[in-house]
Length: 428
Ligand code: CAP
Ligand code: MG
Image 1 (cartoon, protein in one colour):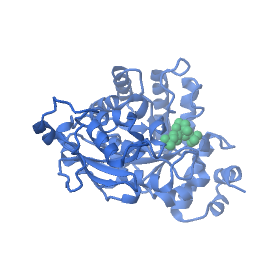
Image 2 (image 1 turned 180 degrees about the vertical axis):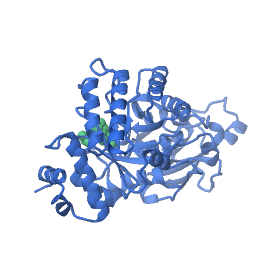
Image 3 (image 1 turned 135 degrees about the horizontal axis):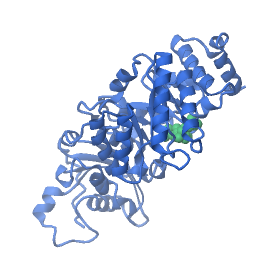
Image 4 (image 1 turned 180 degrees about the horizontal axis):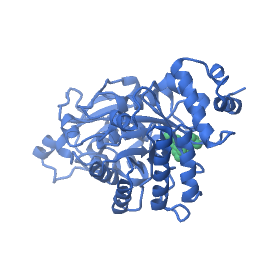
């Protein structure tokens, strides 16, 4: 292993990829030693002096640990862009989130953030529609969007599934999506489900005069089948496809993005399984990195958490994700392990708040996220005592109240569905 990767005086080039790591050396290993091994193993080197690495090659490709704060257990590394296949997320992750997470010289190692260089950004298209594009085809500019997930997660047949979706639309939902674990099961096949549900979405559109979006899950065993399913949706007149980004993997997601452009479909990113490597604050890969990779590759909307709902995610973490979704330039924030990121004109993604939400939480959600958020309610709509349609209506009513600055209690006086929702979900 070369010994010259610690280079505190180095100032990164515009073309360098910058990574921030949380690093905990294992017992008997000093901080610089651990950082050196990490830098070497994530780029060109091995555990011992390799004769095949010439000084010229090393000079050209070596990583630079330009920031090392032992007390904060934090290092920042600048990597030459020549180390990477810049347009390949799988290749980049194989380096900066690969073997290094398994090394004995560290007890814990976490990739906190990656700052993409302008040359790397140029390799990607970003979202095809993004926040503004989705607002345009949904025809809603001045409020959050209301969505639901058909529940139960799986088990309904296609007819029942479409009916639940229809009731959600008729009650006021803008978006209805499949659950993350519903794909092409025997009891509810992909094609029949898509056909019936899109037909009833159209019916709800003509009855309500509002655009209604069905987000059918195209996650599939192969990329080929995933693309085939997406083109089935295209042929059926859909505007969206939904995908489980982590189980499917980045190669599949990059493939889907390319094909989605040809098909003219927006892509909804579900992040199930992310916590397998994002939840431990000391080891793994941060959700911030996942969110940034989604914008880079070009998902149009992404789950980011709720602060008030059932899934873990502190307010500052969720708002950091929101910022990476919607801002053109994200300023560095050392306390949050956020690096400077200029998104170089890549379109913003639509943030999705979902998980354990009820209509009673809408005032809080609106004060946390403002109007640029998709609020999704599964149980919060389908557990409404008056049924799914009323659950959706209660959400629209709660949103109207929040937009008008009226309390839910006052607004519920002449809005039955909201009154019943308050009865069920408002903490006594
Ligand atoms: C929400 C949900 C979503 C979660 C995902 C669920 O349903 O359908 O998958 O929101 O979490 O299955 O739990 P409920 P996240 O509204 O009934 O809770 O958004 O944090 O990725
Ligand atoms: Mg779900």
